[in-house]
Length: 206
Length: 427
Ligand SMILES: Cc1cc2nc3c(=O)[nH]c(=O)nc-3n(C[C@H](O)[C@H](O)[C@H](O)COP(=O)(O)OP(=O)(O)OC[C@H]3O[C@@H](n4cnc5c(N)ncnc54)[C@H](O)[C@@H]3O)c2cc1C
Ligand code: SF4
Ligand code: SF4
Image (tube, rainbow over all chains, first blue to last red; front, side, top):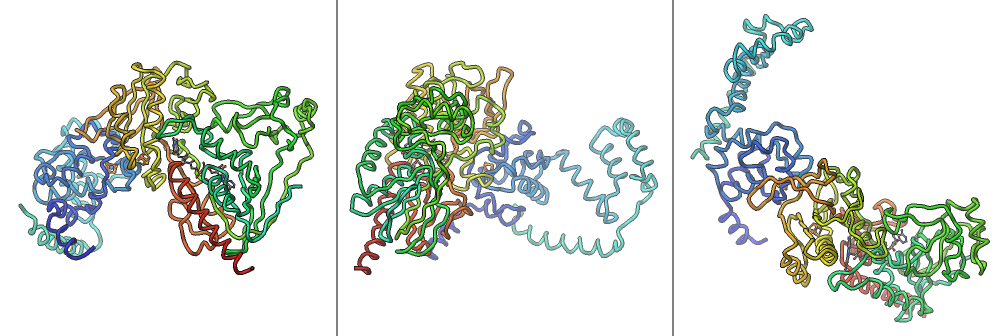
């Protein structure tokens, strides 16, 4: 193809598709979708999605930035991978769903009170403290911030006791919990990564 | 013993489908000597298993008959059936071919009277009907088979049935001592026309071809619609024999799919549009056909054919590749998916579902008896490295009959040029 053609393609290329390709994990695959619908029809939670993956891909290509990034849909993905194994084009749909959700969150565009988003945040905050997940605290936080608090905690108490007996969970972790070896180094690395990411995101903030 | 007279000015044609027959006839009619090697017991290939041809909706028997006649009448063509090329070496202008012939147990005396079949009792799955009917251990592959000679199934050799067949034959055609044979001969160019086989529908797990009786592949449905086929041409559900009126076709079943065949098989859209006509012809206004598709590829002049089907009120098109087929309590196959025009979720029950499966090359890429350039899809590439070996018809890519025949004529011309070169250097 000559330069003139390439330039024209770039000029008219939908900028939201460009944005997705640059910022969303596996985003460069969105253009490969042939709109067959197999992914949407294969999703076991399909009924819960306002826009199934096939539609999200078309919306991206149609430049519907607000609707896509503020959508609840990609947060519904449970990573069952049914769509990926069936997609005739090998589009990594699951990864793109998580990539879109993550990108929306970074831009602060995710729907408010989205439970999956809330849980993801809890998980992240928990992980950042000690460089490893404190499962006891994560469970408790989850019950009180997302679930029904005491009721859920009590319902699961037998499982908790069994895990404790099998040495799968240590109640002492409640008081601080242990950290990775080089906690300082871990936190520095994360900070650096966040700076790099923030600089890149600035370009696309609406 | 089978005798084959051949020199390095002979053309070997492998595969006696419509493409191989065409290439052989075209070359022979210019005066070249041709040996035509066919694996089956008869010529005609997959085309002989069709009820009607698109786009004209005429019977394939008509075109086949003309070609069978031209083959029979031409002294330049030697036909070997039940034969396969087991070795091939050499270079353009000088190849040595080894052909292995399986015993037919019936010799040239056969008049096609069928007395042997009347007395034989053992029955086998009929491959001509893709296993949907039974045939005897002594059989004529199909009513228009050429050569018109019966075949004994090797499984009855050594049983009482074989002796009964021999006793019943009035012209001494049953020869139970026939053995597998090898013939070797010289040839100057090779035309490879081994065609296609249907993609194995069982491999498309979400569609349940292996689990649900009422899910058929398009080649099976083609046999069902043929009055000479397993149901006498009645369109009925295999599960309960009831007339099937509400019929769904699923396009690109196993084609254009990285989990199955990479390529578009190119004819299955047209095959479905053709088969839709079988249904509406048989049932009139009772027909209720749904075609699930990604896009309909009725290439160039076939567009008219598509338009006519679109205009039929008894045919619905749903733009969606079905995600899965399940079965409801009434034994009806249910198509599940989401459509592309509005993203509506559907779960539609049908009497019968036909999978428009595509064509894959009939010879495995690693089973060619000679080095040859094969593409990712398994078809033969036109490449100088192939020397004097030329692909014809569907062995080169997915084609309809019209294009396969044109392609075969081109292959014949290429082979003729090699032979002419040999002839001039040797003169
Ligand atoms: C469902 C369906 C419906 C179709 N309907 C139509 C239609 O209506 N109209 C139309 O134009 N096209 C139709 N087609 C396409 C048509 O079938 C092909 O174009 C045609 O069969 C091509 O002929 P061929 O000779 O290349 O291959 P084939 O018909 O496959 O013939 C190949 C021959 O080679 C033989 N062979 C294979 N391997 C060997 C070997 N190792 N050694 C020796 N011999 C071998 C085979 O036994 C066979 O006889 C349809 C296809 C499908 C799938
Ligand atoms: S299955 Fe793949 S090609 Fe089909 S709509 Fe989904 S992403 Fe697109
Ligand atoms: S011809 Fe039609 S059904 Fe067959 S693979 Fe191509 S698009 Fe799909």
